[in-house]
Length: 318
Image: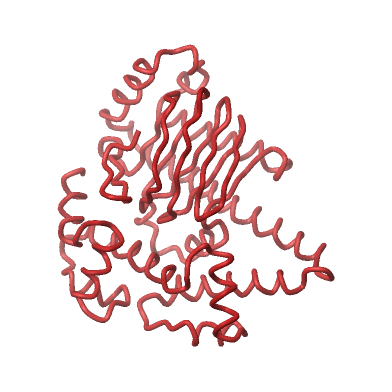
């Protein structure tokens, strides 16, 4: 269930006094294309699930885990039956971790973890997810037979837990597992990609070069989004012509280069808007916008709200 949706932007209503929300779900419902600033990690407990993220379709089966990177547009298709767990967490407090941005440049727009794709590390991912769930709900909820319950019973459990505060230092424990989960996923995905490139280097050398160039370009944007960035200058830095880079970037990222830059800037601006001491003008400049009016106009186009309205809505949910 999406509780707060403004056009395509979901405002996540976290558990009381935390920056985390976990929902157990057995409802047959679809979620339209939307995005949020939080990372989302979906575990299919039983049945199947279809998720489209960044123009890519992910077909999930029982046991599969999907990591959806922050600010990635995704939609979830309706399934007749099955049970799922949705975890959403705000990572803006870890903005100082440059490696976290790098991790999401590897995982973006989403990364699918299955027993087949990562047979050696999959048990660790599943155990880590279970530990996070147990820290959030207590040890008994994860092992419940969700499908044997009525939907309203499961909703009541989620609601009661969400309204209560976590025990002492429990959120810190959850985040320690979560950060390790994300870092381990990025390491595994990168190593798998490198192995695939090595195997196919003779037949697909250009594909490997394209992928590396796109990753390098994303890293440039993630580290320099506060500075002026042009398609031509970034293309030159990754060793491509402007027009080839433009085509390859759109094919790989399912969006144009400038759309990606805008997404990164808007995503960071939402983190800064949580600080009431920062003015809209200060935020605009620090996120690479030429003026506060340009920032406000772009922010409204992307989220359906002005920066001030977004700030007020976020504060009302705290």
